[in-house]
Amino acid sequence: MKIKDVKTSTIKAALKKPFKTSLRRVDSVDDVLVYVETDDGLIGMGEAAPTAVITGDITGSIEDAVESYIKPAIMGMEILDTDRLFLALDKCILHNASAKAAIDMAIYDILGKHYEIPLYRLLGGYTDRLKTDITISINGIDEMVKDSVDAVKQGFDTLKTKVGGEYKQDIERVRAIREAVGPDIKIRLDANQGWNAKDAIRVMNALEKYDIELVEQPVPAWDVEGLAEVTGAVSIPVMADEALFTMNDALKLISMRACDILNIKLMKAGGIHNAVKINAMAEAAGMECMVGSMMECKVSVTAAAHFAASTHNVTMLDLDAAYLLAEDPVSGGIRYDGPEILFSGGPGLGIDEVKCCC
Image (cartoon, rainbow, N blue to C red):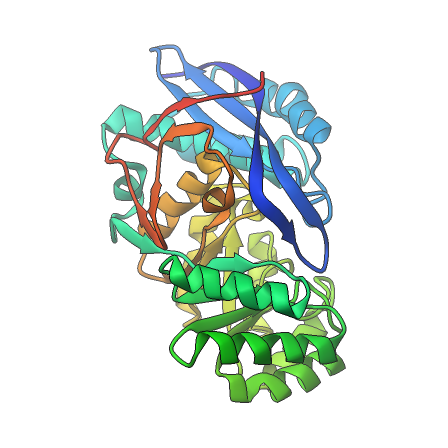
């Protein structure tokens, strides 16, 4: 079962409302689809999300990485020789994690189809039901309160609230949301690198009384020492996100005890094969993981969900991206029942059809 062809196309979907963080605003998802075909007729699908301010990957660079570097490196390779195949994928071009992730998903989709089982079962089969949080974009306080209350009405019991602006205003945002949703709703905060270490310690200590589940990436990605300083100075658990791309990053974060939780995203890790390794490193250190995504359509979110469902050490999910779309261009894959994520039961990713822009 050898790789016969690799092709790309594009997919686009508008959001229900703008997605805003301290780093960027997103009004629609514009991603790159990849298709890997084998000589016995199986076709696997993957998706890459251009996220310039986080991964540095843009549409043109993803397409060129696939066509000019990855495709020549893996053409003719045996799909079942996964270690050789993923080594070639990792080594053929430096960085370009999103392009690699899309190819990785397509390969795993083929493997699931070959063995005729859903991917999460092939990877470990821990569970077939997941539960995600929902993101509350950074906005004025009144709008964030309204969005939070609306999310709770939709059945969500965990809010991932974007902060990382002026820290005094962030405190007011969280206070108002906690008062509006009550004590039983979990609140996670994501600063998207928006504070320095001293401000992060100040604001997190002030927020402790509002029962915050965790704070994600409070300081710039490059400041691992500052992240460790924050982690050691506060009682609220700290999660690394933008500071974690590779296994080497995971090793540094774990060895320095720079955080309490790791957020694994396929677009940063370069795919499921590296995500599995990072999760194993975290488990060995007694550290739990979250699986999250960029703003993506349902192909790649489905792949992330399959990985998350395969292992007990992934205890938190931030996979609401496809739920936030105004219209879903993907048939099959996961489906949402409020915060619940359910699998189709089909082999591989279980994707039936995608309305691509081509």
